[in-house]
Structures are given as structure tokens and as C-alpha cells.
Image (cartoon, one colour):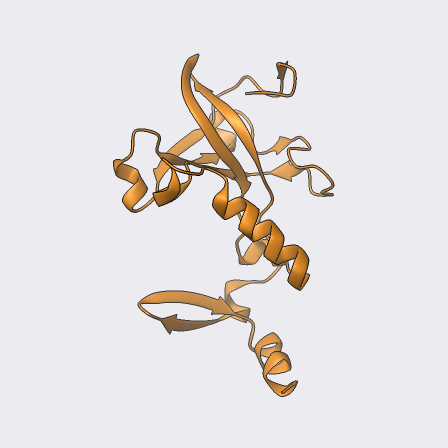
Length: 151
């Protein structure tokens, strides 16, 4: 992987999984990047995102822009950043990158950190599931009640 002025960040095998719903039918598919010991490295240490203290990653996402891929690659990332700053909430950091796989150019993508309950140092057993419009959300009940009681 090359970033900023062509500096080599890493040159080793890693797991790659095609992701997405509708966007899976587009020429540039979204992908998950996975570092695992079986691929040679358990994680990567690099400051991918500006002004961010976390520099060790086991997983990252390469987003193609989803259903907006043919119009505006960065719409989701820009809106997330604006809302994160306005509401002072945690968002997935991101940046635009050119992607080459096996020396073949795949195009522009949005490199994004993958936020899971582990990101917030929660165990799944501490979270509760809520179904909204056939989608599942994991919430911390204590946090939920704090928000609810402030009315």
C-alpha cells in the first residue's frame, strides 16, 4: 500500500473481502481489509488518519461510495465528519485513497476505520439489541437511559 508521495506503508499479504449491498454490483466494490497472523501480520501500525491518536489497526474498510459511487465518492464521509463535529460524537475516520491490488489500479476509494463495539471497549454481553426497520442496533442501556432522562 502506498500513501502520501508514494511512500510504501506495507508490502505483505492481507485478507480482502468484498462488501456492500447494492454497491456489490458496481465495478469498484467496497472491500474489507483484514490483518491476521495467518497472512503474516496480526495488525498494522500506521497513522492513516490525521489528528487521530489510534495508529494500530486489525481491520479497515475501503468504501466505493455506495449508491453514490458514480456521483460523489466522499458524501458519506463528509456528512459523518460534519455531524461528528457538530454533535461531538465518535465517527469512523476516513480519507480518500487510490487503490492498487496486485499492481492493478482499482480506482479511488474512501479508506475508513471499522467501528465495532470493541472500539468503545465494550463486550457484546454488556450491550443490548434493538430492532428498527429490520436492522439490528447494539446499545449500552446505561447510556440510553442517560439520554432519555435528560428530557
